[in-house]
Image 1 (tube, rainbow, N blue to C red):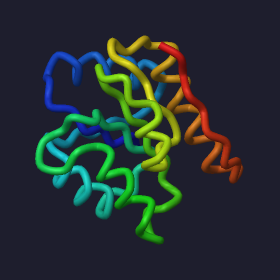
Image 2 (cartoon, helix red, strand yellow):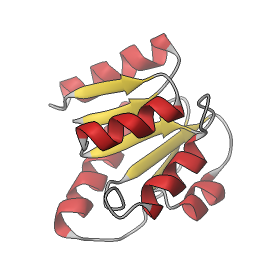
Image 3 (cartoon, rainbow, N blue to C red):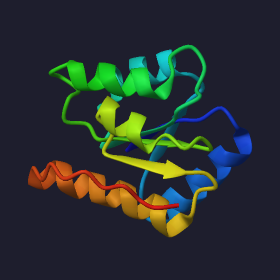
Image 4 (cartoon, rainbow, N blue to C red):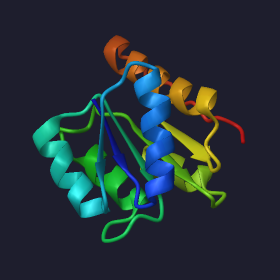
Length: 129
């Protein structure tokens, strides 16, 4: 299951379409605090969140997940309209994607994150956009 932090219903529908078409199950959270709570209870394969999510921004969420030994291995992919690849890398994100999301890049980043998690490859991937 892929857990996504996204507040825009149109973007959610697009993300769901892309990921279900690729064979993934998807769940959503409206804000960063809800996303953090959901991670603890659902143990997703990967977390995808926008940086500018309410209540707990995506960068802080990523740092918290990586500080906690029980969630450290869950890959986090951050995305935004902002140019924030450096800040995403500093927060420990597996990848940073720029909006608008491109299906092949979006799905490929998630597939890569999951593959890296299961093979213990700790390579950082940054998709240009």
